[in-house]
Image 1 (cartoon, rainbow, N blue to C red):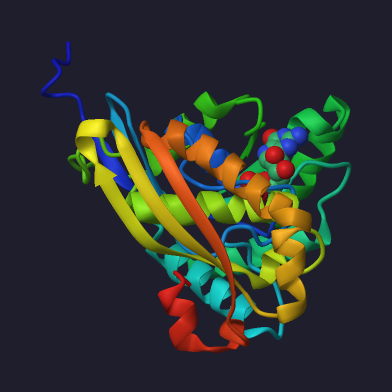
Image 2 (tube, rainbow, N blue to C red):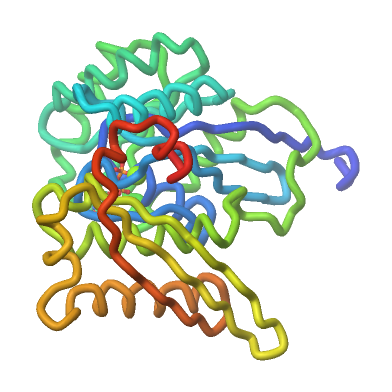
Length: 300
Ligand SMILES: Nc1nc2c(ncn2[C@@H]2O[C@H](COP(=O)(O)OP(=O)(O)O)[C@@H](O)[C@H]2O)c(=O)[nH]1
Ligand SMILES: [Mg+2]
């Protein structure tokens, strides 16, 4: 019988790929067991590489979330796709996430085609099975196995946490034998500053319409811990591109900005396990989405 010390342990980097909005970030949060990546109903929410860590008795997964691969002439979007490609290149296993449906979405086919080219072992994950009738699943699996022969295909619902055990077993079997790569209690490589900026950005995505979310960013200017009071004081700037957007983000009597701030603060208090004092201001920085230095300073 195998004793604990004989049992093999596996560890490695698992990268999530696929087009925007298929549920990569939701899947990451599920696999980690807590929120490490922001999620919204809108595409292009994720901008950079975000690592979540899952440690089990038999394996440790360093899971990389990536922005969706998409075509766009915009500098900001190109940078997001570059970030995605770089992170995907790190994957020892790639999870190619597609959406369930009666047929394979052509955009998912294209995304999988790109992921195959990277060359790392690829698992195809059919997500959102909860949204579609069961009888659609088999034809979709057949279509995928015809087009991408020899690949493991695992249907899941990231939202409901369905069939993740099968996905985990499949992925673990593909990882190399290795001791843990991160401390066991670590769940992300993001700093609290980064988490704060992302959560504020999520609330902007949820509150604002049109292109405002896509052309805004968040800069944390101050992050002070008052440990003895269990308080974190955060000052953040919402960076937007156009003067005409300023009034919309602030809202009549400052209402919209206040709602963004309150939603962000409440969530941050949970995530950072502390009381949070959040000060938010809006600043116009024309053309930041075209300025490489600004973009990297804003975490892109
Ligand atoms: N019904 C359903 N919705 C999901 C599932 N996974 C993700 N979503 C939703 O799809 C949208 C995009 O999710 P997100 O994780 O941000 O996608 P990403 O752009 O690939 O990272 C959000 O509204 C999620 O709540 C799922 O398994 N079932
Ligand atoms: Mg995402």
